[in-house]
Length: 380
Ligand SMILES: [Mg+2]
Image (tube, rainbow, N blue to C red; front, top):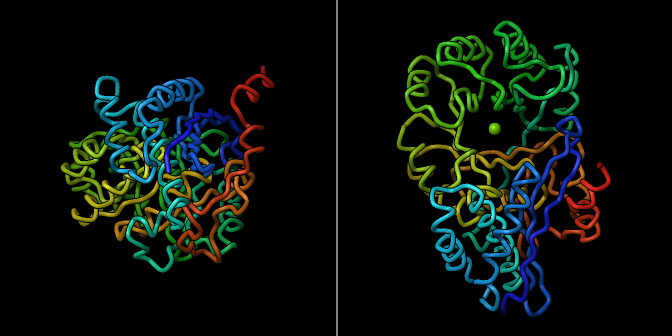
């Protein structure tokens, strides 16, 4: 089997889990000479990043055409080597490497008639607990508690709430309100897992973070995510010495080297990794192996399309470092319309993906409908 064509496809879609904000991804479709197709994705988030990634994928494609798509490790290394000047240390090039790599794994699985999780060595978990990964939608805390109860009524085993998000929830900005929110969630959730994820708009200094986490941990937080952002080794060491809640970060890293730096600080308990950013399934798996060696937890940052969800599921099942899986609680086009059989939980549990490749069937008409050029054209 040989690679016949590689297409980069920027898509734009309204995300109901984020107040219908328009989000952007760059998909990658790799077709083999026998007509089989593999799908990949990069989580570019903004249209200009999607366009840049499209150009880079098209450049990298020149070195991949005619090659055997089952040689995922070799081709991954080759695309990384090609980006030696503009991709050293990560950045936009890592998005392109990610999208190509995920598509190659999908194609490899289809070529060999095996699921990606089997190609990665097989599932180490029989099933994983599923939690809701959400943005709160209401101003009133009782309304937010009602929303949580509704989401968890499907059996989901926990809640990770983004602080500093759009809308009227105003979480992450006031000590008393944040603590009242966590208290209310604990009351409505019983013993289920509760995580708080600080978004880019939350700017706590170390003292604020210590005070806030100490107050919130009275209500049993499973972890606090990015309370001091992507990189603050001294701040994190300080926070860690004064609190007992697990600390999660890492999702903004691009490369294994970046994750090595984070691990070396000794301040991270739960390492977030987005395969649509951190150089695909090959990159994510290498990070998981290191996280496992360091006796830490890895956690997929999968909050985009069903392609990254399927890739994340494959790795999460193939690594003992991964302990749970996140789902967006509201139905959304890139998860539920894009593929014939959306990835979802059953009574709060998710099971290993089956079927060849990523185990998803992408509906081409849906991709066509969400092409960025069309969506942005309609909006202007
Ligand atoms: Mg996060």
